[in-house]
Image (tube, rainbow, N blue to C red):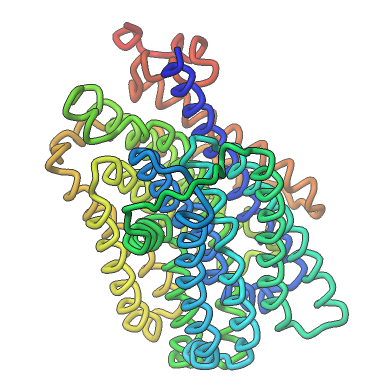
Length: 526
């Protein structure tokens, strides 16, 4: 009974973490739309230049460091060593502080050089402020890891939502203040301040919850025989690379896009505006990727090396199902956004500027969703180092392609380099997975049914867009766009089911599964 209770608690905790992560990522993507509306393309460009640094700090605080600490807690538990101030909290906190302190010192002292590389020395103060966030990470990271190592996921989930909410409120408030009376470059400082206050708020929440859970910090004088440094460095930094693919690509664009646009003949102000327009695609890609990969990632905890050895057929079904769901959702989201992008651009960002190269950029949704899903499968099978190395190689490819293509093709070059880079990551991950799941198996994906369903959905969206009358009010435009997106999604799902892309057992997992099964061709209702 205790084992069943523990398993139930773990599953409930995993669901809570997934849900809070989804809410956090939707908030993180969503607030950048009003931010652009308030501060304009230049203000948005300034924020997006520092965002990759803030995003990496958040990733380390939510995923990297807590995973490392939870592993330490598990290792200590196996040794029968209880968590004490002397044997655990002080060394763990010291190592976290050392790593974060080194990142802060390196970033703060080199902020002027980073700004120079970005082609905009006015960004120096914003970059310096952004690196301050790292000094606030050790405490919340430590407490999240302690709770997770004890199988208690609720504190991480609650603190994550609180952190994102505070960040959103502060950055929007700062943007309003700056655009009315301040210097537009203070938007970047405001972004850093929002992350510092968000991290502080999460630390307070975690402290309160930690004090109320005495079992999470039992005192003992036993000393541990584990390597704090190796575990925190390896799990905290290396594993986190797999969650940072999109952030690292954004960082490369922050460092290379403006200087290379100026090399292509843009004036300084024009290049900054162009970068701000290009960055309109980032929140939409983030949202599309989260939606497309979230359902698939729910199946991933079932994929482990131990389980594969015991139940290989079952693990194969989980892998295929995860990638299949991700593929169908991602290609549908990408196709829909590409088709409707001028409308979406006008709705969210108040004009249709850059719609053509942003359409190309939306292909990233398909490949990044697949990359995240397959890398999570590989992590479950113990291929952590391999996937991290692929990400590092991908960053170098993105950098090289930006330098090569942006002077020739301008912003189109940056969009194309991102698409090629994430496609490269997917290809590498599939090759890494080949030993456990043959490449030939992917022939079983419903390629023809998917292609026909995409054609049907796109045909409907193009027809509706062509018949569209001018809508002046944004609220009316929002309602109109949401209605045609809902109809487009319904047509896509209907065609997928009718054309045999799903089996009965696959539809049973979905909401309204019993009704959806009735739409299946007769041969697939078994």
